[in-house]
Amino acid sequence: MRKGLTFLSGLALATALTLPLQATAAPHADTIVATVNGEEITIGHMIIARATLPQQYLQLPDDVLFDAILDQLIQQTALKQQLNGEVPKYVELSLENESRSLLAADVIEKVMENAATEEEVRAAYEEQYSDGNGGDEFNASHILVESEEDAEEIRAELEEGADFATTARERSTGPSGPNGGELGWFTKGRMVPEFEEAVIALSAGEISAPVQTQFGWHVIKLNERRKSAAPEFAEIRDQLAAQIREEAVEESVRTLTTEAEIERPEIEDLDPAILKDLDLVRN
Image (spheres, rainbow, N blue to C red):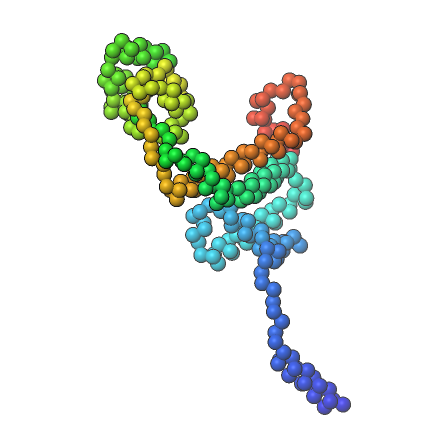
């Protein structure tokens, strides 16, 4: 009896040794790498943690970074468990804001993925540059001062015959002052909106009324305007695609907010400065 049992056991062992080993599932996002008092930490948690690290940490060897991230997640889990499931108000609100932001960004990403097909980019290029014209280029000079009064005074002097370049060297506070205020050639989109709008409205040789920007007050002279040659499609393709994606996102946001049922109740005695009061979200 014992001999038969030994034989059968040996046969089973021999058979098992000749069978192929069962394949082991490859690690995935839900693979558990640690538990802390029964709470799971997964590969997915580690991937997200790594994605938010500053660039300098990403230069570390993979094994060093793996251990460091896992150690940090274990420590954080042990620490947060001390709250016994209670979530402070400011943390709850922060998580809601972060969730809202991430989900909105995901929708935006999908909108961008579906925009700017090759056909759309090509159509945008043809619409803008089919005549071979790349748009206007401007050559302008300016005098930058701190107040509107100074700008008005300078403009009056120029209208009475003062030389623009000389006045710029003497009065302008901007970096172009020593060069007579000359800015050289530039295209649309290169200057702040207020400055660009004033330049576009000028004729060659004309001097603007005082223009305020974030840098101060400008008196602008348009020296010359010319048409630039249209860029090649390959040169402008990425820029056009980015523009189409941006417009698609803006249109999507506009449509969604227009169609949404939005209510903004009137709140009596609401002081906007209330947003500075962090004590309201501490508990």
